[in-house]
Length: 490
Image (cartoon, rainbow, N blue to C red; front, side, top):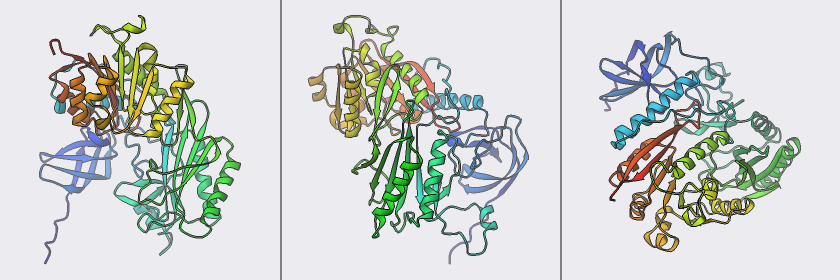
């Protein structure tokens, strides 16, 4: 006989104290830490506990007693449901304070290394419509809020299709998004028309559990050159599916001539990743261009490119400044002869944006990236910009960056590294230490793993400068750039 669980408690009249990790805020009840989403410091609320542990619990708001004086109205009608922009009710100035503190806390608590005074965080140029890439799932089962379920006629609507975002904790359900404010409004018009037309022609929507259904996923990209890319993922499993797919593509191409790159793929895998799939261009090119400081960058559907174009420029400006700054080392600033310029390694180079961005100041830049298609784009980006002092290699970083590789291509004076959220593999850190560059510039989208890696580098390198950069307004995510200088005598 199973034990009956005790009902989780209701905490009344609780004041929210401060911003915590993952977009939540924190309060204390009876010496217990309580994490709460979709609130701001100063809110006084009643809380229903949803998860209870020995030292902390998680809760949701069931009643607002008093709203904080700093609270602002959310811009998006989907706020609190889709979960993508959890800080919309927090003024942007307060968001920046919280992100600055987050970087400081993680570098001090996890890294435990000596740190200089941090530079003030660089706020995003745009706070809305700042993204150049968004993905939307398509599903035959949409998510309903409790309020929506109450309004449904009995037995109706529970298998309705949707195009939108996955709900946290419900991988097989999609919440329909009418308008997302994170990208130029054209993407909303295209997405809503795709849904309307797909329903009109009787197109099936994907069922992730049963793995059938035709319309599966949408990926939008746009650029500061005015180009638009749309990649549609289909899942062919019935006669006539290919014809319906072509019908949808032709309709969208006709209604939206702004799309300069219309691509599709038949994805029969169990997940939506496309790195190993062959894509087909239906209309236009299979790429778009971004520009930065007079340089052009080719971006394909599989390419990594920072999703906030304008702020990426300022992020790369910081990385270049930290790499070429002479105040902490005797390296060239790029004004001397090519022999005096530094040899730079750009790890996790993506489409070679940073590599090409610093190439004019370097003797040579060696870029390494896991995705072969991105490396091909990086090579093309050098060619179209007339840059002839870059060299790019594709493969797993820990397999490419070896002592033998460094013997062949030269010991780097500077290493710029911009790894994924997981940070750098210990083998990569080991080779970097063996290579012993005079300077390391570490660009990170996850200060927690960055802090872990700084601890591994600390014996040989000191942290000289720290610059947080906000790339993602209304979310808890933050980028951070750290300059490390080799310790004397090492």
